[in-house]
Length: 426
Image (cartoon, rainbow, N blue to C red; front, top):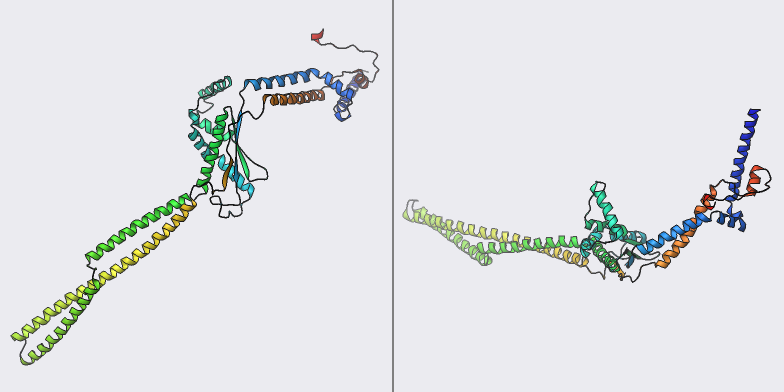
């Protein structure tokens, strides 16, 4: 008997919980709820709905009036993806618009640009905000640094990190335009930062795509070629002066004529010596005199031949040097042309780059959202959040709250009910 009673009680409890689950599934079928069910739901959870709604609206209202408003400055940049990055007169081959815009966005958000902006505006020298929130944040950071949880960071690095984090660059849909946006409490500072970012982006864009490095290389090569050319010219002039090449053709003609005359004289002296030796021996004074004349004439001819060879050698050397100078002149002219071309391409003229400013940022006259708008959003959001929380509580609520539910769960009729009053209403 006891076992049967226990089994009966367990089956009844199981049936009770199954009925509760079935009832819960019926209650969350909101599409089947009538107006009466909705009103019952609202009145059942009116405390939760009103409290959540009141807390959300109150907190947002306090924050709206307590925190200073942020002013947003915005500039607009046009990127011509069908043109060359440095010269619009050249074709920029095969770049998709998304790739071009993403590349330019990455350049804007680069650390180099933000460092230049921070240094240009001297952001690290701006006065620190003195508000309750800012003082509290600084104390917390100082405490974390003191115990070693955070590393100390300079004010310049803080500004650079803030720019990298808070500057927003957004491409405009179906266009070649993107916007640069930054929000801060000071409207003038917001406009200055956005305009500085725009200018530094254009400068960095030019440095990336320009041929300034190539121009400097060719300029160095051109100057080196010019120095070498001047040195070779001076060396040639000094060599011509040293080698007495100013009247080389006349000298060569004189030497050739003189050598010819001496050759004839030697021939005549040899004939006379032959005639003398036919009559006398070599010890005869006349024969000795002829031999002496022949020897001195041949020595003189050797000297003249040596001078003629030196002139030929010097002239050949001069011709070789002149050829080297001509080759150096060609190299100098080639480097000069390359330098002029590269310098022309590297001219920092923003009217010929493929990125141009459509609008610079103006000083914002008012925040992007008024306090009334923010409070209205808080009212709508608080209402939605409170209803969602009430629905969640209803989903997990397994209590029996009406006689109809009690009759269905217990399977017995209800003859009467007593309203439950909370402790605070007793």
